[in-house]
Image (tube, rainbow, N blue to C red; front, side, top):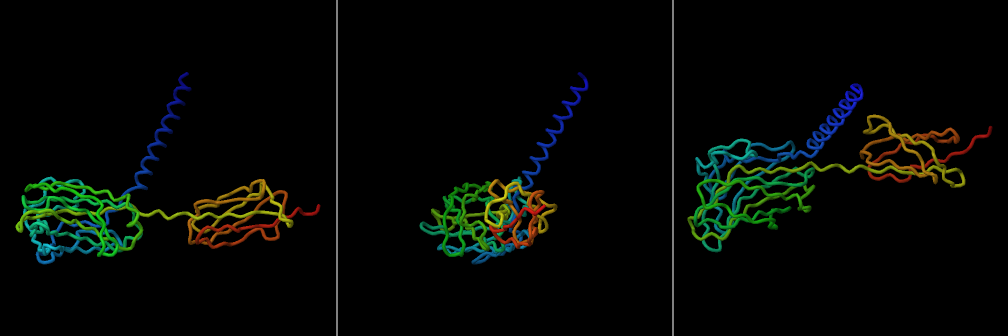
Length: 303
C-alpha cells in the first residue's frame, strides 16, 4: 500500500510540475514588449514641445511633438510626477509636459510616433494625466498610420486635480495598426473652458506583442505510375529550421501533410516503404509559403 501511495504521489508531482512548466511557458510566450518609455526628463518647452524617449525596444524609434488649434504651446512643469507611480513606470522623473490654451472650442494634443514596429500587434498604452479646472474635460485617445488622419478609439476624463491618475488603454482589438511599420498615437484634449486651462501628462509607455510568424503547410501525394494513391508510406522531412526530422504517413489515397513548418528555409523530403520503391526517393524543396505538390511516384519491384 505504501508503494502504491508513493507512486501516486510521484505521478501527481510530475503532473503538477508539468502543468506549472506549461503555465510558465505560456506566460513567457505571451509577454508584452515595452516599445517605448517617456518620462519627459529630457522635455524642452516650446511650440511644440520636444522630448526624447527614456528607452526604446531594439529596432524601434520614436518621436514626440505637440500641436492643436489652441496653439500647442507646451511647458515642462517640475515636481509633478506621481508620488507613487504605477508599476509600468520605468523611471519617474520630477518633470512632466503640460499643454495650455483650452478656450471653448480649442483642442491641443500630445503625439507619439513609433517606427520599426511592423513585427508587433496588440498595442497597449499606459500614462498618467491630470488637468486644471478650465482644462480639457475629455481626452480622445487616437491612432493613425500616416500622422494626418486619426481615429478616436476611446475617450477618458482626466481628473481636475494636482495629483496624477494612471490610465491604461487596450488597443489589442484594433487590427488596422497591427504589423504596420509606423504607428501614431495622440492624446487630444478638448472641451476646456479657459485659455489658461492646462492638460498635463507624465510617464507615457507603449507595449505590444510580437507578431507570431505563421507556419507553412507542406503537402503532397504518393502514387504509382497510373496515378493510384499509395497508402501507409512514410515521409520524412529534415533540415531547414527543424531541430530533428519529423514524419508523416500517407492516407489510404496517398496524401500526406506537414503543418506549421517555419518558412524561408530549405528542406529535404524522403519517402520510405517496405513494399514500394521509388526512382526518386528524396527531393529538396524551398518553403516560402504553403508547398502543395511535393509528390512521389512509387512502384512494386519484381521479385
